[in-house]
Image (cartoon, rainbow, N blue to C red; front, side, top):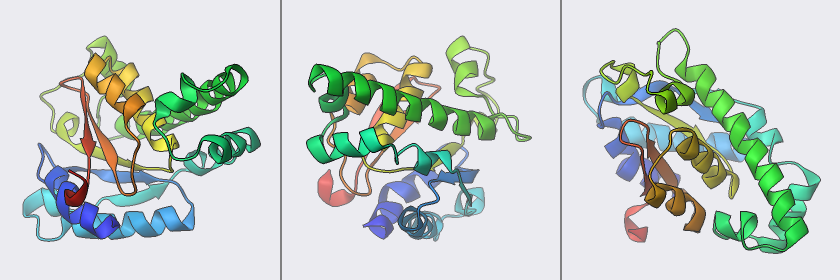
Length: 205
C-alpha cells in the first residue's frame, strides 16, 4: 500500500511546485520507517530533475513517544479508527477532554518538528510565519512539500494543528476532523493557499 501511495500521490507531490523538501519527518517506530522508505522510493522513481531527489528520512522521537500515552492507548481501544471529530467533539465528557489534551499536545509537537526543519539553513517559512503573513512565498523553499509520516489518529491531529496554525479555510479544517483516515492516506496542507486536501491511493478516490 505504501508503494502504491508513493507511486500515485507521492509522485504527484514530487512534481508539485519545487518538488519535495530535502527532509522527510518520520516516527522512529520500525514499521513507520519501513513504510516511509518504500513510499519515498516509489514517490521519486522516474521523476526528472530536482523533483526526483529522494528526501533524507529524519526520525523524530516525539512523533512516536507522543502516541504512547496510556490514556491515549485507552481512548484508541475504546474509539478505534474513526474521524478525529469522534475523539475531540463527539466522545463523552472526560474522554473528550483527554483526547483534546493528548492529540492537541501531539499536534504541537509535530508543529515544533516542522518548524525546526522549515526554519533551518534552507530558509523556509515556519507555520507561524505563514500565519502572520511574514513568509516570502516567492522563494523556492516555500514551494517545496515537506512530508511528515505518523500514526493512526495522530496524523490527522498533526494536519489539523498545521491547518489551524496557517488559518486554512473551514472546508480544510472540517476535512481533517471528518475524514476516517485509511492506511497510507494523508493530508496536503497548502500553506500558501490555506487549503487542505486528502491524499488517497487510486482505489480509494
